[in-house]
Length: 158
Image (cartoon, rainbow, N blue to C red; front, side, top):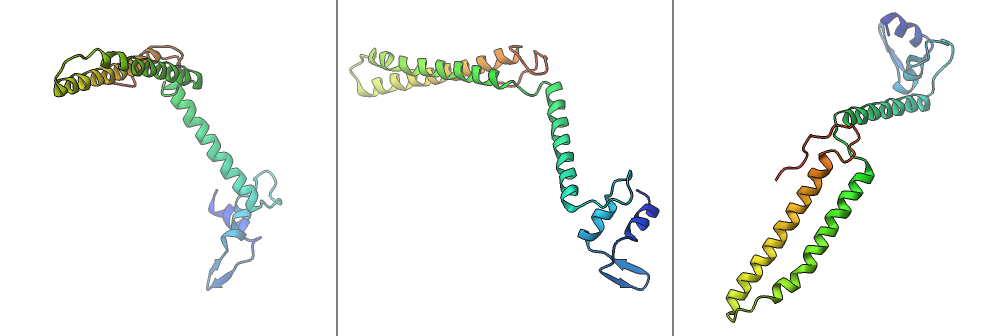
């Protein structure tokens, strides 16, 4: 928009005040005149229309960002996330269910030795759960159905 266009459009707006050669306008009065469509010069644009255009610009920008992230392989399908989480939770549940039988197998007579063995069993189970989760994520990253179609960009590391 050129200075001339601004000056012409503001001629239709009543200044809030003047000082010498300068006129001062309320933003709510000036914006509709400035954002008037170039196709129909006589039509005034309301603040609501300006807000709607601004919202539309934001939505368009958000969609463009999502599209760029899809193309870069940074987004997953919701179904893939659900499938991986289901597998991870099932592995977690299975590991937890195996703890009682593993702990029951401890038959050392010494209390402290039993506690040390129990801690080792729990630590091993937690490590297995962590490894299962990492493996599940890597399997998904290795091409199970990424939005972008790119299959080999690792997202999770140990």
